[in-house]
Amino acid sequence: MGRIRILSDQIANKIAAGEVVERPASVVKELLENSIDAGATEVLVDAESGGRRLLRVTDNGHGMLRDDALLAFERHATSKLTTIHDLEAIATLGFRGEALPSIGSVSRLVLETRSAEEPSGTRVEIAGGRLLRCDEQAFEPGTTITVRDLFYNVPARKKFLRSEQTELTHIAQLVTHYSLAHSGKTFRLTHNDKELLHVTPVAELRERVFQVFGGQALEDLVDLKIREHEGYVLEGFVSRPQVQKLNRNSIFLFVNGRLIKDRLLLHGISSAYHNLIPPGTYPFALLFLQCDPSEVDVNVHPSKTEVRFRQGTIVHDFVRDAVRESLIESRPAPSFGVPSPPQMAAALPFSDFTQSLENHRFDEARPVVPLTLEPGRGEELPVFTLRPAPAAEPRFDFGGASIPLTEKSVQPLRLRVPDTHGGFPAGVDESAPASLAGLSDLRVLGQIHESFIVAAGRDGLWIIDQHVAHERILFERVLRQMAAGRVEQQRLLMPIVVELTAAQQIEYDRIAGDLQAAGFETEPFGNRTLAVKAAPAGIAAADLERVVGEVLDIAESELRRVSVDDLRRGIAASVACRAAIKINTPLEANKMDWLLRELGACAMPMSCPHGRPIALRYSTRDILRSFHRI
Ligand code: ADP
Ligand code: MG
Image (cartoon, rainbow, N blue to C red; front, side, top):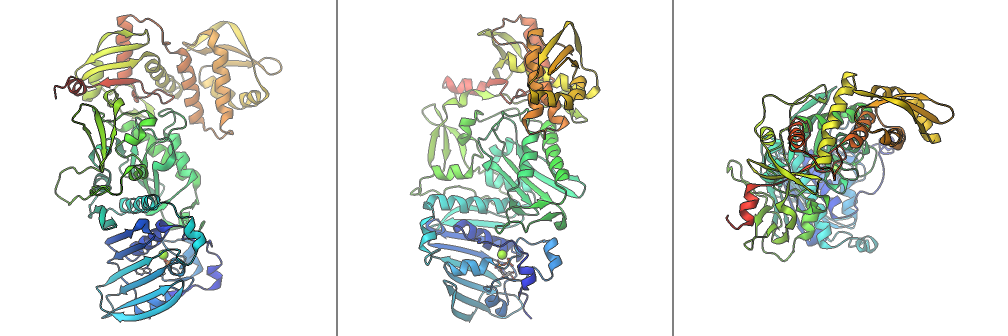
């Protein structure tokens, strides 16, 4: 008795309908998912000509019985669903029973498969949806599906395929991501017989990240470890705040092993980086969420990349808090090897795989991505390496494409971060991590441009932006005070009258309590005016009107979805910005000393509440290198 059956119309009609085969990568996705569903521990993908001429996926999974091999090409033929209730808790990647017939109808497809239960295997040949042959043959248990000449019979679709390079990039990204989601399996990808990716089974996600992205990238990532909340389990990696991307393409989300796109989770991640990276920039994230299959509906879109959570808010807040906590807990490594301005994103070690592949010259004899790493060899084989060119100018070397890294010599600061209490920064960790001590060790040399503090440290020369450094210090202090319910206040001799727009008036009525908690004593004063009687310490009276306006605008800005937490952070950022020492202000040595010490005690001393970098470090190594001494 075969495993595959045709779904009844009743179930079939409940399945999100639509075409799944858009491009070669979508074929790879469906075939890969089938291999994983079949329990394979080894999945090999071969492509030719960007997948347009040939795609082949070979697995060592449980294979198909003879009868099933033919049935699999019928619409809605699946072994993964039986009753309508199964749709409510889907534990496999596939369930629609449409991939094989769809792929078979737009290509020349050969299926070779054998189940260990049968002595021989089956070979099925299909072209443009027509069965050409079905033979008995000798195979090892497992399945190989070869797809040639995709869209050969649908010229309109073929026209829409992009360049070989672009299609390959999509395929490579896909295989990479599935390899990350299944670190216990072997994955190999070849293109025109060149190996692009080859990873062997490892015990932990961390090791797989190392195999795929290399050791340098791992240093720039924070390991979330395994976190649990109300039946949800989250693990993965997110980038430290120094890493800033200009789009969301480096955020990879997996729910129960399935690569998905989800606005809710994206929003949760962005919120975690609020006040850490500039607005409009994004982190790198690789997150794996596990939950009971009944908690998430995957039957939302034919490509199965969208999901709907039963308890959206819980998931959102869990992801946000987990990412934020791990960023605060993390102890950034003391050295930082790459530049941070967003425009330099291409030079980051785990820069978009896409971008990297686009930069690759296809006639190179070298593999695009030297990713092979045999277990136990213990040496680093990063995806790509940063190494100085013989001339002295550092260059970014990637699979033969070499990009100069002229801005690399000045590097953003990396400091250790003290522990926190109750989600808020708790001040200096007395157990004094070494590199934090490094910061208090700094010897002030002077000030340049009356704006930047220059200091000598054990590991090189530091330049610190006095305004943003002070802003960070004040921001964390105000947040702490707000959490403790005692914000330092200054009473004004004369109340200041602030005029409000209609929208601001509405927001004021809503957040008056939060303003109070933040140290503002306000009172409505006639029509759309407000009297401010007291304000958080440090803000000059001349700036008060601006600050109050800003705070009301924050409340209004995100269509009132701003949470109390975001609002508090917004208020703290606004207060800190106005109260901080300005640039173009001469500072005495003791004031500069104080500033550096306080900065060293911050939870997040590397970026200001608006996400700008605070300090640059010119490491001793860089100095030596610049003088050609190493
Ligand atoms: P679905 O994955 O939604 O069930 P597909 O059209 O992708 O639908 O596959 C149809 C059926 O063929 C699957 O349910 C499975 O039983 C079988 N099948 C497909 N690929 C494989 C494979 N690599 N190994 C074993 N069985 C497979
Ligand atoms: Mg499938």
